[in-house]
Length: 438
Image (tube, rainbow, N blue to C red):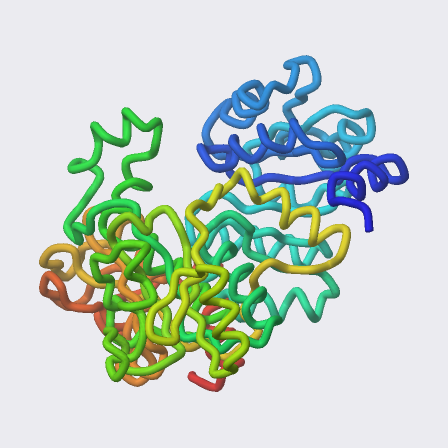
């Protein structure tokens, strides 16, 4: 069988490069564009970003010559037709409008890279309804409505997938590897990059964010644990592995200690049993891991002979890196060439990221953005979040408080008035009906 690069070359010779439409030209989106420019058989040919001139700047940062970039806006006469002509002529489209971008015919796949749950919900739904494949880098949206999006895509005859390179996708690749080989998978997990501080907000991390060329809100969502929680929710729902406790255990743990710590208590670890999702703080980051076991004597002998990191009948499959946006083209290729997703939730969801008050909240206040000043995310079992009416984090942004919520307490649906104009609220209600919740 030919290599993936050879297959992309062959595809390009027959059809032209895979034509990618990208929504969100921030740090992640621009890095993705830059990587695709170094590859055979794939190009970002249309980019949308709400920030003025950001799409054009991202093309420049990705080494695309300025004379190949054409601005197209909804105010143009026949903007979709203009965009199709630009792409057919071998040039690139820069726009402010995600709505316009998903309507362009000359696109093979849409990549969502904004990190804003509401935008992710709108873009993924619109792309699926337009008959386009979707690669979603917006884990925040997936953790909220991923089950529905997977169902919608299947019914529409297109593929919906989270991306290789982000932790959920990287974990799923390891999970599928171990699962195919017949190992029992005890748990799945990831390392957390930053020391956990639930109170972190953009002011606290502003200097570090500036030094790292990051959005302060994005960095705050890492530090306050929100990003880890939504990532664990997506991989947990895709595999059927739920957290054992609210927020997961999250112990300090070295790579060497993984098969000692993330195993059942009966065998010296911290888990109640098998089938959990969790995370580790320490030198495990930025890696991902899967804990496996087997009772077959010859396989046990071989695992020990191969010096896999093991202890007491458990072994850790560990990958010390994830390249985030730089690996996303692998999923793009698999989706277009083979109609194969990296990760999607086809199982009944078992985990939820709920909204928790970052400080005392009062009636009349509105919940701000993830990584902001009002809430952070905590993973919880769906078996707990549903009967307790806990508010999914992805629905919280823009909601107005009608009750006081003390710092550290979860928000409930009854504590807020949701913005019913949001696509993510509408789609979550649809998902809940599909699951028989409401």
